[in-house]
Image 1 (cartoon, rainbow, N blue to C red):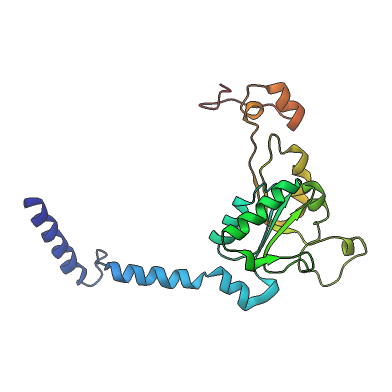
Image 2 (cartoon, rainbow, N blue to C red; image 1 turned 180 degrees about the vertical axis):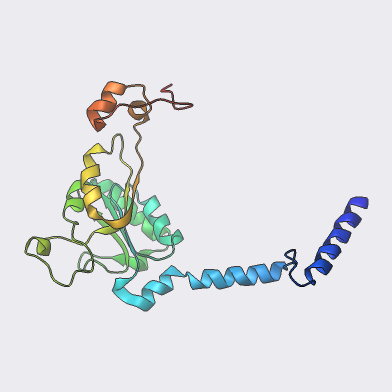
Amino acid sequence: SAVADTESLEGRNIEQLGKKKGDPRIRISEADIQAKADEFAKSINGRDLVKENGAERGIRVLDALAASGLRSIRYWKEVPGVKEVIINDLTEAAVEQAKENVAFNGLSKVLIDDSDTDGATGIRVQQGDATHVMYVSRRPPGLREYTYPQSFQRDQFDVIDLDPYGSSAPFNDGAVQAVVNGGMLAVTCTDMAALGGSHPETCYGRYGSMPITRGKCAGR
């Protein structure tokens, strides 16, 4: 067709122009692009990086209110460079469900039991109070010597994920202290009625601030 012929002619013209010195319109084959992508992917293989560099490398993630642990499993399976994921929840039923989900996803071999020390590589499933877990994890990692109070602490986390039912206010202080300097604190609240402006008094009581409604977030 005329369209196909035009596209073919345009392609040949660009390819010929690309042979001229200094012309930026150089055609790159899909095979070359894929080869470069594979080379880049290999260079950032986080799991191999952790294996090669040992305990000093790798991301430690705390899913403090993990429930069934599905997001924790995604951290392990999808994020390069994750060394340890802690699946924590207060309820026994959630912890048992998380263990089942870990097994269902074929990750039983990377489960860390209670006898393993902090910093082990794998997934740790534990039952605990989120605020307590974070308050006892305030020691900067990599210290060669500990003060007496630090000897009772555990290392801070690179990533802390908070996803409570309702407000995150009870957990914010502990989370800020338990995440490393330069780390990531991910907070999701099912508390939009207060944060969105429908209940400004509740927002002030929980967060000590007043919501400013603009655009689509109008408290409706």
